[in-house]
Image (spheres, one colour):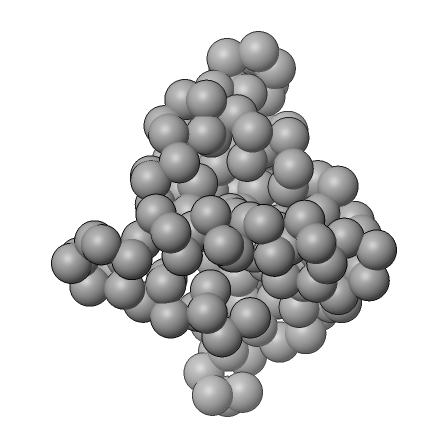
Length: 168
């Protein structure tokens, strides 16, 4: 796996300047490459590098859409989920929960509690809250809410999320 990650990193680092030069920083291709670079960096334990790449993605989207439109844009939820998951991997629990709470609130407002984005973020937030020590009851409430919502859903993805929630 390490060799594959190192190879992926080299290829992505070589591809990004070409994509930016030919299509622009805000192109879909440049953003996909930057996101993949962030994912590989996180997988390799280079958390600050991963977070810097995610921040550049956020900046790119905000410049294109404006902060208010970006706040409701589907890409925001994906990127912020990845940021919070990376912060959790880095055991930066308080930073993760502080950053994810407002994003989860927006996701619930826009998509509802049963949306995959809301459920995934709830799980990541609950994990962060459990590790902060002072928010264990809030984490338990999140998990209980998820378990109650997902218990009657036959969908395989919902059952996988339910299993992860119960494991926490």
